[in-house]
Image 1 (cartoon, rainbow, N blue to C red):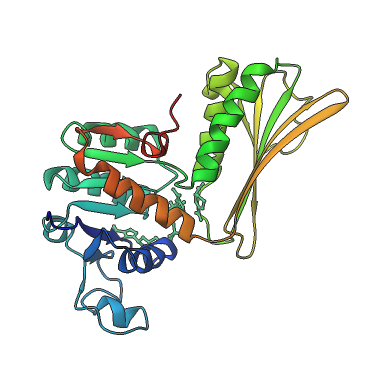
Image 2 (cartoon, rainbow, N blue to C red):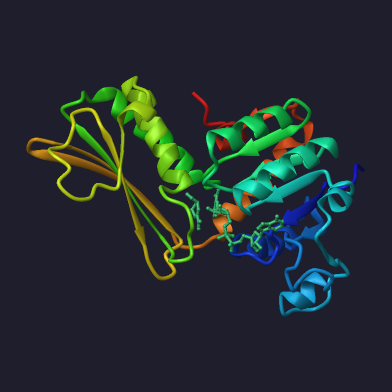
Length: 271
Ligand SMILES: NC(=O)c1ccc[n+]([C@@H]2O[C@H](COP(=O)([O-])OP(=O)(O)OC[C@H]3O[C@@H](n4cnc5c(N)ncnc54)[C@H](O)[C@@H]3O)[C@@H](O)[C@H]2O)c1
Ligand SMILES: O=C(O)C1=N[C@H](C(=O)O)CCC1
């Protein structure tokens, strides 16, 4: 029997990092082989289980990405853009599947990830849940069926610790709407109106970000025209669904050719 793929979790003390550790420990086809945190973090050098307030796991939290990635068949990464760009090159060097959940990346960051994907499998998505990925397909279909007399607005809500806006999910939904309508999102995107903005420009796709409390993640795509509205929503109430999606991607990527993939590939939803 082939050995179960070994996984390293980066940003292991974070909201998603800890959720990923719990899900991997409960998984029957993956094993946890390493845990990474940023240099200077007080978890570095400690046993991961004890740092999480549980029994020892025999895995010390490291700040040396190169060393821990060498032991891994997959790296699951929900951290920050600068870290993710660095990890993409190192995971490719280790020929490990790199599952990227990090959002807020610039075009320049994405270009570097593209380069790393020449040598290894990278699966990246602003949202790893089945529901949201399905919602992108529905959004694309609805946008394709409606003309520009229908205004499209994307409203998202997240917890008060989130650092990027619009959310990665909102951008995925915006891309899907733009694709359905046959336009370039960069040319029609209207983010966070404020002040005397003038009337809404026909064809724009609007983005609005709510931040508060412990909201896990809520997204609405609103199509509005004279006399009627269509609203499609996704509500996440538990981060474990993002973690489970990431684990699915780590397994799925094991036998794939180097390249960039997303959750539509993993979930078989590409159409
Ligand atoms: N794609 C999805 O489904 C999905 C779901 C949830 C969150 N996210 C994204 O994941 C990212 C993290 O979210 P979070 O809520 O867990 O944030 P968080 O702030 O709780 O955790 C991020 C962790 O990364 C660590 N980190 C930062 N730089 C590092 C480095 N150089 N090396 C190692 N560790 C480093 C931080 O110390 C922190 O522990 C965000 O970009 C968020 O938008 C994506
Ligand atoms: O908590 C976060 O941060 C989330 N980020 C992703 C996004 O930016 O869309 C997914 C939902 C949770």
